[in-house]
Amino acid sequence: MDDLQRILWRDMALYRALPVDIRGEIDKFVPLFLKGKQFEGKNGLTVTDRHRFLIAANAALVGAAQRVSCFASVKWVLVYPNIVHIDGEAFHVSKVVLSWECVEAESGQPEDAGSNLVVHEFAHVLDHLLGVSHGTAAMRQAFEDVERRLLGDGESLFREEDIENPQEFFASASEVFFTRPGWLAGHYPALYEDLHSIYGLDMALYLQ
Ligand SMILES: [Zn+2]
Image (tube, rainbow, N blue to C red):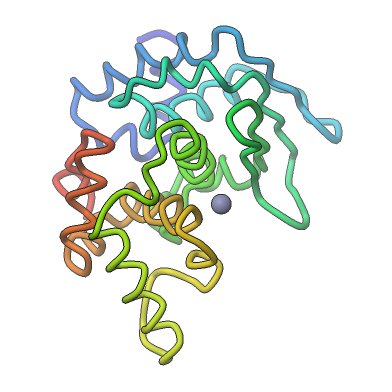
């Protein structure tokens, strides 16, 4: 096992949960993703291979199945130790800003909060590139249903900021797909199927 596999196996719960052929896809994606990208540590953070590998492997979940050339359009990845106002941001298709505190915690225990910042930000990039958030009836129906529930005090894994617009909903639904797939498949089966075909993974088989 080389350094990459050792680090991912130890620090990325989703990697451990996936079958060997999909882990192999991630292993192949990571070096291609890292090529041509500038990682910049902010506020005193020194970027190491561990930062690079974990960010790249989470991005692989989003980008491996689509023809996005391992997110070659993204030239800068800015890594903050933590960010006070926002946890992350994707600027169109060229720059992604991340809080390492989130990336590290969510890589270790993705199912806890149903969130994954790297998935969220790269889902935005994917959406900028392919325009997927406006795509399907299932996405619109789920968006409206979540809106109704949140307005009516109903229970949902989604939060108010997730339904700010279709782009946010797509990015947040992608997080839920990778962290709480069983919940998503149970509550929004058509949306689950859309995301299954976008990401090429039947996540509910691997996680509940
Ligand atoms: Zn967002």
